[in-house]
Length: 156
Image (tube, rainbow, N blue to C red; front, side, top):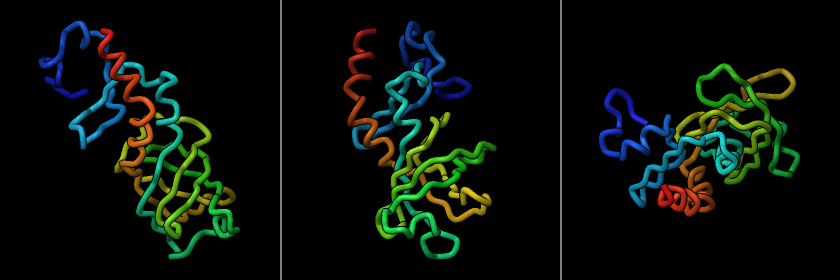
């Protein structure tokens, strides 16, 4: 967390020395930034595989063929952020295809609200559209694990 001077000057040195620390969630309504030095632990698995996407824009202006079968679900190749990796997963759409829920086949190294995800056709890697990872990504995570994190911090 932080660069150069970081926030280490404001935390107990015993806690800071257990880093590196990663921002794993934020809750602006409670003015909280939740950090952990155990980002690969089980409590974060769902936060690294499942997320909500909003403001989806389809290149053709209509739903792509994997989504028009009536189930509202399609399998895509996806590229998250600007990295070189392409992963596969399922998109469940809502709001006439303008938002949805993504379930990746494998966890990602750093999903964060505001990052883009591009959707590609499975067969020929044609880019079909893109959307933005929603703040709702953290809402589900916070509901399920904030109590655990709070207990963990109070025990140190």
